[in-house]
Structures are given as structure tokens and as C-alpha cells.
Length: 492
View (cartoon, rainbow, N blue to C red):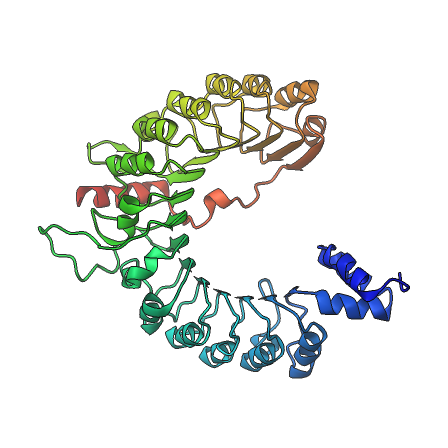
């Protein structure tokens, strides 16, 4: 290869995407090491990064054309003294003139001074901060002012950041297309209304609160009880919306998004207290481009006096009739007692009808105690279903495995905590020789030997593993949740 011209070697290097392969390539010869370094545009470093100034200068000098940098100290056991600090950000900003995408996770030693250095990165378009406890609104404002092309901003667990001047500045002069705010104690859903005209440019927005999110917090200072109330905010371009762990009330706070979005393609609503079914039906009827939806629900005292999840089959019918492009759906039911099936507002028939009416490729059912083997028979007639995940679906048995394997396109199946499925069900899957991927987690009546024969690629674990559907939930007794939700329902 050393006889090849450098432009051709450069083209070869560009086509290699795996970091490990690139690292190996650079060890072959000095020439390849030089060319690989010149063409490396992205780098990810973590706990092994030596944060001394000399080491950082050496690292960033070797890769002069870096556009994307991720520094992640999650899981680090070293002291904060050994982590990246403000001086390191100065080295980064002075050596990476092409930097456009920066992600910093668990970098506890950086503060507003370091973000001030980042303001010199004039091509910076994306900044993601995860757990930066010393960064305040002042630092975010410096980046907003200095980086006029900033279009992506993620603030996760930045507890010292509030809704200061940065939000007002971006409202007037910014062009954010993606804004994510999670676990930032100083920013409430009402503060984000200050973004005003900035909502028009947003294509992706996420807002999440963890902790005791059902306890009422800040209030909208502009709300006057008894008077007509609405926000004159346009969000016509919003395609990706996620609201998690918030309390909504009629026409107050981020609830306005559910009344104004019409371009949505992806919608995640996770344990949002105060959802109104008529409002959700109207949303679905406007969003004909919706492709992905995740509804994570728990029982509350609803407006009709019933204690159940707030949405019913009427919502599923609206989805089926109005969203012909729907392909991915997750339905998670938390704290719903199988003894009281009416706590889940959906029925098995409603779910099956939706799956049969839309080109659903992937379905997740979590805690769906109302879903039986008969429902699996309905799913088996879906012409598009490729991936199915069943979590804590205690009514599904081996008979359901015999039925679901008949789905014409099914290639991936995940079973988590499905206690009534046994090795006999795995044998049915094995006989069909149809599945490409099978995941079995914490299904006590399925052995590893039984699962191994059921698909070409199998992941098996007898113990429970972390699962995204449980992300953010608090380890609190079901009785406590019932009490809190009943109080909330009675005040509406």
C-alpha cells in the first residue's frame, strides 16, 4: 500500500468507519498513520484520557481536522482532579478550528470559564452537556453569543443552569433546530415559554423531569384563572417531541404543544399527568405524518371519575384512521394491577385493530396484562410486523408463541419477564426456524438451552436487566402512587 498515491490512500481511509480499524491502520506504517490522522474527523475519549495540557495538545495536534469530539467520564472512578478542566477546553478550542459537534459528559471540572473558551469555536453547531454541575446560565449565554451557527443544544443534569439570558438571546438571535432539557432543576416548563418565536425553528424538542415529578412545582406567572388563555407560539416545524414526567393542565405550560403541532413524525409521552383524551384525538387527527409513538401511562383519577390510564380505545381508533404512516409503537402500562384490568384504558381488541390497520413494523407491549394469546393470534395476521417486544405480559403463554410465529415478516422477538412462557414455547419457535434474533430476559420458565435453538442469534439472561421502559421511574410503592394520583385527579 505504501506505493499507492496519497489521494487514493485518503479515499481508502475515508471508507473505514470503525474506530478500532482506524487505530489498527495507523500502526501499519508512518505514512498511513499520518494520512489517517489527517482524515480523522471524529474522536471519542473517556476515562483513559490524560487531561494534562501536554497530552491534550499532543492529541488534538495529531488530528487537525476534527469536527466531532466526545469526552465522556461516565463510570470513572478517578478523582475530579484527573478530569478535563477549563484549560483542556482552551486547548480544544485553539487546536480544533473545524469543531462543529462537541459532547461533554460527567466533566465536573468545567465551568463558565471553559464554556467561554468554546465560544471561540465559530463553527460549533452542536453542544451536548451531560452532568456539568458547575456550568451556569452565564456559560450557556457565552456559547450562544459566540457560536452563531449553534443549532443543537442538549442540557442534561446541569443543575446550576436556569432560564437566564441565554434563552432570551436564542429566542431573538438564535436558530436552534434541536433543544433537549432534562433534569435541570432551574428550568421549568414555564420558563421554556420564553423561547417564543424560537419554537418556529425547532424540529426536535425534549423536556424531562425526574425525582418527585408528580409534586406540583413552579406555576406559570402569566396565567389568570377564569380568563381565556393560550400561547401565541408557532411550532409548525416540530417533528420530534418528547415530554416525560411532567404535570400538565388545560392550556398551561408545555401542554400547548399538543394543540399546535401538525408536522410530528415522532411522539414520546412518558408519564405525563393531565393528558386529555379529546385533546390527544385532535392531535392524532392533525398529525398524518406520525411514524413513531411511545405512550407510557399509569392509572390516575380521570375526568369521568374512573381510576385508569387516561387514554382509551378511542385514541387508538384515531391513530388507526388518521396516521397511515405509523410504523413503530410502544405501549407501556405502569402500576396497573392485573386484578383490576379496567385500570388499563385500552383493550386487546383496540390494540390489535391498530396493528392491523397501520403498517406497524415494531411493537412494544409493556405491562399489558389485558393482552392474551388471542391477541397474539390477531398480531400474527399483520403483514408488516418485523419486531415484537413483550415485557411483563403475564397473560401470554406458550400458545401465544405458536401463534405469533405465523406473522409473515416477524424476524425479531424479545421476551422480558413473561412468566408463563416455557421451553415448550421456545420449541415452537425452533420448529418454525424463522426468527433471526431472540432475546429472553428474566423469564423463569425458559432455560438457556431451550432458547438457544429458537433463533439464529440468541441473547439470554436469567436475571433482570435494565430496561429503557423503566427509565426515570422512582422506586415507590404502588399504594403511594395511587394516593398521589388520586389527589391530583381530585384537584382538576
